[in-house]
Length: 345
Image (cartoon, rainbow, N blue to C red; front, side, top):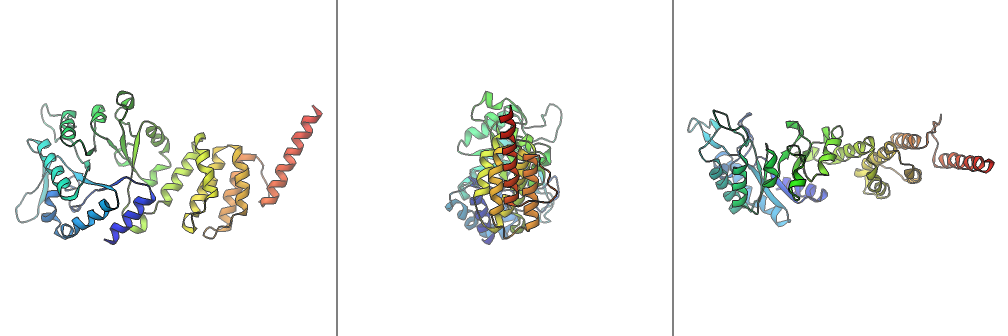
């Protein structure tokens, strides 16, 4: 339950709407068996979790978050009964099987979000690899109050579900399967799993996709690595290096907002992004940052970020890093020089 409290704090911090428990039944088998994807098996494969599952899930519902988990269109079975040789196998009617899994999760835990893992078939003559859209449509029509998030998708999946994309399958946009999805269906959107280590380098794709409708799925696990500092820094640096001009109104308030010691690196990231952005309207607010005290960031690092940002915006290469008054003096001299040249003309 301590972990539940930690997750709730993360959800509130990110202004989240819901949470998906990716592997409620555990992830003890190797790929491609991987996730169980069947909440009906919880008591059998993870009795230690089954004991606490109802209370655990209730904490999130009581806090106002929608909840969900992973399902698969395959049957999780014991290949050698009694020996726990678990495996996955295709079934004759995958829609009926998925329906039973959703019904169980909804009835027991009030769940309404379902990540559909491995919605592909093992192959064979006249058997499509990706699950036909008609199956997704049938499932969505049976459960109109649920959100289905298929791992793999075809272009028309957007009409009936929220296709998933993630760096680990080479996708980082919400409309990766159909760039015109929002033209065809105004309310279409996709789900992007945000991975902070790749977000900065792939922000262009994510930004483009978000304009076509996106829902970010932030992945967090162990409490000690779940903080969103790295993710925020990656976004800030990416916005600056991509010169996203529309980011200025959002970046400037970060300089004025003091959220405590643990968030100071976010402000430092905003300083760097403003320098990369190249908009001279940031010069004044950046100068004021010299007056701000940083308790959790080394003065050397803080001043280096400010100096580099102002150097990029002004073109001035100071041999010695100036302080607040030094920059104001130099900018004043530049302004006076411009006036003098204007008067001579």
